[in-house]
Structure formats: C-alpha cells, structure tokens
Image (cartoon, rainbow, N blue to C red; front, top):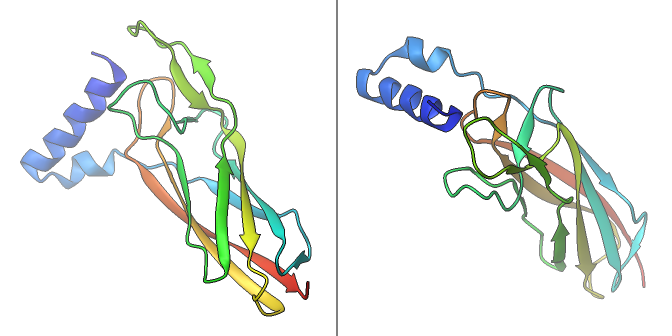
Length: 164
C-alpha cells in the first residue's frame, strides 16, 4: 500500500465511521512563516520585492508548486494585494526530486525550509505610509511514509510607501 493509498484510506475510514479517533491520528504539520520585505521603503510608482521564508520540521517536505502526481496538493502562495498594489510575479524555488519506494517517478518537492519570492508593483497614486499585503500559503506536508491533509497558513507583509 503506497503512502497515498494509506492516507486516502484513513480519511475515508474517518468519514465513513465518523470516528474522532481516526481524525485524532492525523496531526497536520504547521509551517512557520517569516514574511520579509526586501524593498524598504518602496516608492509610489515603483516595485517591491517580498519573500516568504517557510520552515517545517526537518523530517518533512512539501509538494512543489507543480507536483507530478495529480492527487498531490501543490504549494501555492496567494497574495490579496490592496488597491494600488499589483502582483507582478510569484517565484517558487526549484523543486527537488524525491524518490519514493513503490513509485516509478520521483516526487517534485520543496525541502523542509524554502523561500518564495513575489514582485509587487505600486501605483504612482498610492499614498505614502504603511500598506499591508496579506497572503495565504496552501501546502501539503509529507514525511517518508505519509502525506498529511492540506493546510493553510496566513501571513502579511507591511510595505512602507514613500512619495515618488
């Protein structure tokens, strides 16, 4: 039985039986998020670079933003940019190959610690001051034997805007 089959079977058993005990066995690993603003301050009409440093337990990895298995959940950073701020790009690190027993193709994963970068453009009419850019990371953590249910973690970057 592969790790994917085991987790699906456990989730199905919990759903079918309504068993709290089955759900109690699943502990979703929590990612520690550190939002970093590279561009301080950013001029109105300029570009800001922000990073999200992600760290999990050393025994874990997450699926990449483009997993090779359709049943695996990709790691996705979503930014909810306020008016006047536009997300130009989000850049994920290169995926690493992870060979798994019973699998013909390696998994495309990010290690327990990785960084995602985003490029934001600031409109020329954004008023000077502090502007929050909230974000959400969706990820699926796995260890050597099991992939856990997907998780979400919220974060936010504080941009300091100055006049052009």
